Length: 309
Image (cartoon, rainbow, N blue to C red):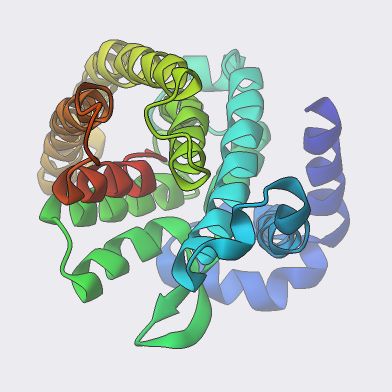
């Protein structure tokens, strides 16, 4: 992915200043000082992931015979997951290359590195078309922002609303800059997303309960446990430690909000892990009957929502 980083660096260097009339007012209004420097990367990422969404709808009928027989809403989700898959793989590789930044190592709370700016732009630039207000009315909304809005509109679980809002805040506030050191480390949690998407695709292509879904399920649960539970706890400890060491430089409410909020997200990971274990287990224990509708809804919710910290 070095070529992606190089391309984004070129776009930022070449076009950031010319886009200041658009990006500066937004950045100033939100207090995100570094956002305008990486606005071209954000725009390119938004275009790239939206293109993946559109192209998926064109080529999917040739890739899978099941696609055309799926309901309209499911075909739409299929395209969203195609963009999600590209996003997850991109931020995983880009995130790993940002791990060893001397500048961020020296200041984990207020330090800044342009490579993390490009990474944040890609993470925030995933735009997907979502049904809003009416089933046939589709508008582009930031993925994390949509996670929050969708739960409110659709009456989903409060846990998903908390997840969406928290992720939106974490990745946008990185442009202040603030806790940029932890952005690539948080995005490593995306390692479970490709397997979540594959699990969903296997369901929709008639492979529920198959051997390949069993193998993918084992990898999914193992990856989720390793990156979100074990590694997540490790990152959280250092995150709290960094915030506490800088406690005199920030308002107490901000300190408490971040510490408590991060802890809540870790608790949500445990909740989602238990739901996935339960839902996946039901797929292989009910051999002679269809998976219960409740289990279907549970795993679909987890597959769609439990990602992108």
